[in-house]
Length: 64
Image (cartoon, rainbow, N blue to C red; front, side):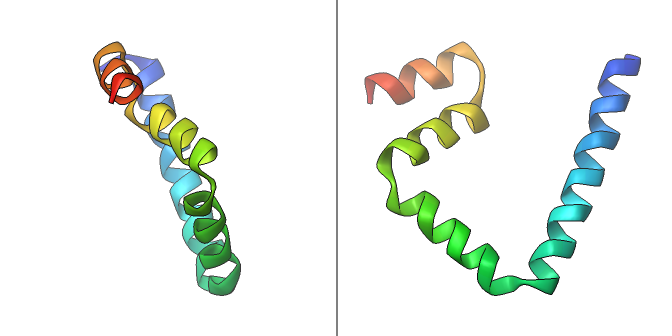
């Protein structure tokens, strides 16, 4: 496993822990954020494209 993959895995782990902590302390703010993302079709599309990544999933999403 490359050092970049290990670094990114650790950074993602820290991000998830921080996000969990914020959602634990302020659950209403987290739910409001999710509602605002799902209420905006453009933001939802961009979030989906970033989440899926790769050429094939992006092409399927755009063409769909």
